[in-house]
Structure formats: C-alpha cells, structure tokens
Image (cartoon, rainbow, N blue to C red):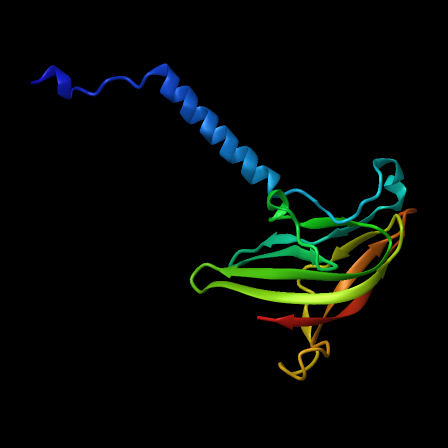
Amino acid sequence: MNQANRSQPVPHARLSAIAALLAALLLTLCSACGTFVAHKLPASSADEIVELRCYARYYFFYAQECHITSVDGLGPGLGQSLNLGAELSPGRHSIEFVIETTIPWLGVRHEYCKFEHDFSAGYRYRIVPRSLESEREWGVDGKTPNKSIELEQSRPDGEASTQRIALFCTL
C-alpha cells in the first residue's frame, strides 16, 4: 500500500478555520431573527416605543409563521429578514406581513397581508395566531379589505384587549 494514499489527519489550522466558519454562519442565522427597528427614537425614550409581534407556531401536521415585511414601505435590513416583530414610533402606520404555512407533504403557502392602524405609545401589539378569516371573495377591487385578523393590544399597565382588524391579502 502506498504511503501517499493514506488519509492524513486534518491539520489544526484547517479545523480552526472550519469551526470559525460554522460559528459565523450560526451567528448570521441568529441575527436574522432580530427585531425590525422601524423608528428613529433615541434609546432613552423606551416608554414611547411601540412593540408589534408576529408569531411562529408548530403543530403536529403543519407549521405557521408570521413575519413583518414592511412598515410604511420600509423593509427590514438583511440581518432582520426573519424577524417576528418590529419596534415602531407611536402613530398611524401601514404594516405589511406574510403568513407562511408549511405542510410537509404539500409544500409552503405564502399569504401577503397589509393593514393600517393607529399605534399608541408604550403599548404592545400582537397578531393573534390562527385568527385570519376571509371576509369577502378574492379580487373584489384590489383595495377593499378581503380578510381580517385579531390584533391583541396590551397597555403599559398590563391590561389587554383584542380587536379585529381589516386586511387586504393576496397569495
């Protein structure tokens, strides 16, 4: 047997480079799950910031995730592309999000939705999982809301309430 054909142990430097590459990849993936910051408020005004959360739910036969894709036409940065939430300034905002439903043997379905809402300072808002409902037939005029979803809002004192919000959604 030829000595040159024997497998040689991997040099320490190569293992270190592979470990560093894997660590960088993991760090990149984790940073993509960050909160989408869609305001220019200073850090000292934390009580003014509005928090909006989507969701990720995993069930026995399928998975469903909601990601905020745009606030007032501004999309998240590359490091925030898989976010489940956003920080906003108080006031009226146009919110776009996608609901991604994965059924292993059927594939992935994306539903893109948009709504406008007046957000109050210091409140926390949450899109309620599995609350999306059809209100009208598809393609009415492209502008009239055709679906609705529940939006839970929590005041700074902790009291929470839920309201149904009109949406326009497309597949």
